[in-house]
Length: 504
Image 1 (cartoon, one colour):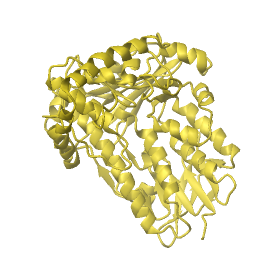
Image 2 (image 1 turned 30 degrees about the vertical axis):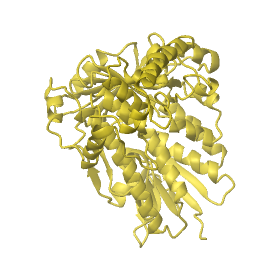
Image 3 (image 1 turned 90 degrees about the vertical axis):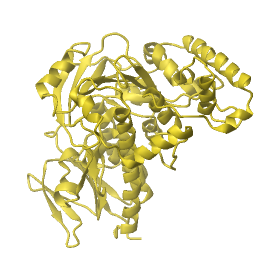
Image 4 (image 1 turned 45 degrees about the vertical axis):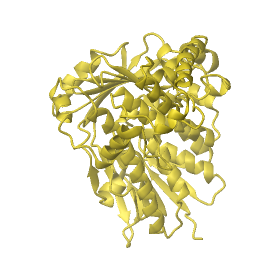
């Protein structure tokens, strides 16, 4: 095999250092060198970011101590997302992590619940989701420490400071041999076959390599500007194109969920860390100016502002191919979907995971690149459809922004998913799907999309058995959660972070 001798990562931040950390973990003893080129002049986007459970899988795979990582990155726990005002003003629902209920014989819990609802049971679906019940009560316990209890099937992720995560992973990667080069890339030199040969820095230094990873953010220096890979624009189905972000000091205890609150012209997030919170307003500039967005956000946040506000313009979509010749784009350089379901860091991890799975040699076999591109495109489109679902099923028509969504023609793939679900609660599952059944069921139910009927197999179970299960399990879950420590108590006891120090 003609091994890759050197990989060059262009750009730092969360994307660059996640890539560097993963490569350094697997190539610590050679044969491939890794160099990361970044500049302190170019800031990173993230100030406070929300993750999903696979992010912790990454931390564990790298052999990082979870408790130490939480303390070093000021992290707090996340059990799911709380959606406010999405279906209609005043509506609230949760998208929890982990399972909802448990199977009854061979039947999925959701189908049993549908039958109970059809027969007048007063429960809500989320009454049986341990992560939702904990989140709503402000409680937390590691599910792995509560085996054989009703919260054992819950799951969790983290709220993190993206800057501190990048610094942590930089230390991790550099300790394993990654070379960091400080400098601004001004030129990219290509090979005769169109691949990338090297990048040239402002001061004339060069970084040559066999393979390049583009983590240059929205600038997309390699895949976009140099290789000219076309961009698939999805702004026809996702109308927001800007965000304003700021950090505030925490007021009160940090809640163990991400808040996603629909606004007049988009939606607002709140991501509490241990001592401060990330806040933002994702909006559509056609209906709202930057100044109006800042004023709307500042008028709603709690606590004193410690960083920002920062305006972030973005374009929703992805490159037609993320792997072209000897270059892969990861993170914002490859594509962007608004962070409603906290998928940005996951796509970085998934992009690197697939790259390691289809790892090339010097020839960079186009067959590997084609399969990589197919798999990543499926992931991006699944996330796009899941985000569009929140908008496409709203009943809101109180502003021009929400009325505009009544005219959006949703992707055929999402239309088919909704039709299949409405028929009998059936979901289209893929091998590597990011969003499993509880996610689709939670958002569909939260947005008022309920199947026309349950699956007939459920009729094999006596109705009295199903109704009895529903009657007993929800109160039992609520009673157990009431005995758990609060989220704040759990953090203080097991993984307290040093107080936040404001930079001078």
